[in-house]
Image 1 (spheres, rainbow over the protein chains, first blue to last red):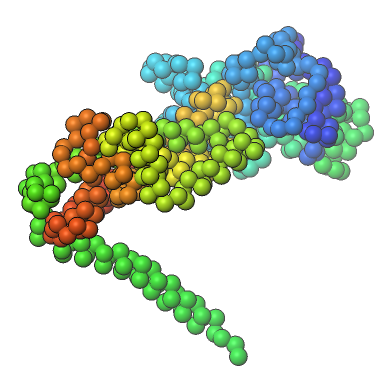
Image 2: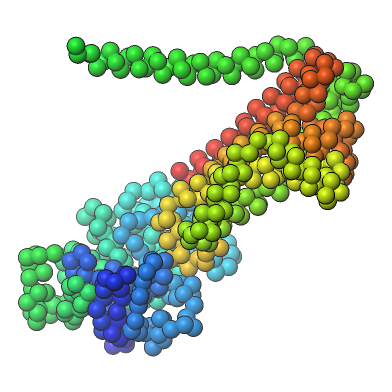
Length: 251
Length: 278
């Protein structure tokens, strides 16, 4: 199995507070990797480093290395705008841009000067299909994205990320505000998508992690406690903390 | 004694209603007076012919042209400057003594009486830079005068755009400038337009700063270095010097109607833009 992302002794602090205390993890290509852990464990902070969205926070100190395809993305010569094309993000709260459905999805491609009308239409269609949203919106692509329901908006955000044609997709608790049906649709989409993408799913929902991920990582207080194949982590965890968390004893 | 809360509610409602009526009433009264006094003398000839005999006879065509030139040119100069400053203050710098100084300066400028702008424009543009009484000196002076309004309203409008939208834009691989032009400015558009409209109103109605810098020539201005007269200045001179009250009211009516017209157009555009995707 190929390693897509590798972190080496990754440390991060906000001011004096240390959030990540030396993370070493390998994320595999074409797999869904679940990051779980209680609030404050550093899992969301970790993924915000992977596409350098952390740059928009203040008083951040980072040390260590993060390799994507063997290239250190914390090195000075990395172009973070290019990086964000390769590493797409879906946030916890769906945030459609105040534009039409079509224009939301075409936003990223258009920035790359892909303005050919037919190519763009194909890309938008494909992205919506991959996000399992096409059937619900195909007749109203020009209406406002803000009129969609919460579940549809989240799939719109997934489609918008897919339209960037990324290699890695980061999902930061994408189903936290969604109903079970919308959640099932997102999970179905992710299962299909892992053929072409490397996916990291951050979730507080251990059942969801158990359901759809191939690998699971458990974080606690800025440390990676346990990491391995999801089945092993859930049936036979090697750390007591992991077991307690999975059984809902804290978190 | 306990007062019935429902009664209080009613009294408050009546009180607030009458206050609103009072405000609107004054506005209606002003417009009505101008309308009744001015409309008998308002016709196509008045609008399209030039003033004769100091404005005692003839129309106001040259002052309409003067107003349009002055206002449009000032807005064209002030809008990019003002919006640019607002973008700089909100998106490209962090809060520091520098931004605080700029903001303090902007706020102070907003409170200065317009005649002082006129005096400054007269001393600096008209005399020092040798522009003479000219459209150019008028435009530059009015630009300085309306800049604070545009900067402040644009800044507020830009600040009110949710941070989340910017974050999403960055995450979709936009640069800062792309985010500003494609996400921030369109969302802030209605607020910025409000500031521009307020400025148009101020520029259209300004007299003191204009007389000092653009002068009050009744000839049709044909170049930036020509002097000219705006409708507001024309009204002021006609009324102040007792030349013709009839013509003064008719001029005022054209002034009021054009401000009304500009506002309607602006609201129409604003609605069109905002209702599209919300």
